Amino acid sequence: MLSDAELTELRSFWIWEPLKGRWDFIRDWEEHKVGVMRKFEEYVFGRGVGSGQGVNNRLPLSPWLQ
Image (cartoon, rainbow, N blue to C red; front, side):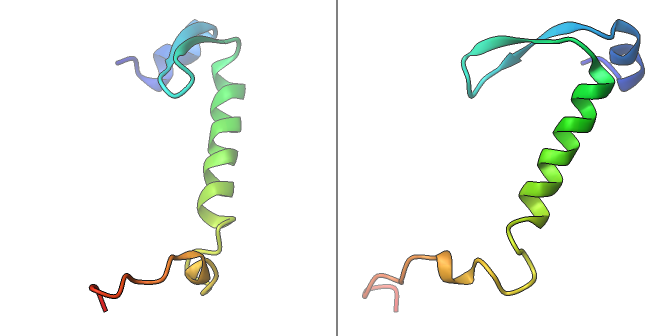
C-alpha cells in the first residue's frame, strides 16, 4: 500500500474499483482525495446521524422479535 506522500508524487495512477468491477484512472491524487473526503462527509453528516433523523427509516420489528 502506498503512502499519501507516494501517491502525491505519482500524481496519476490506476486504482481498482471493486464495486464497479473495473479499473479507474486517477488523474490527480490531491483533487481525488478532496472529492472523496467531501463525499464521505456528505454521507456521514448528510444522513442526520445524531439529530434523530433516520430513525423512521428502519423497518418495523418482526412479531417474533418484539
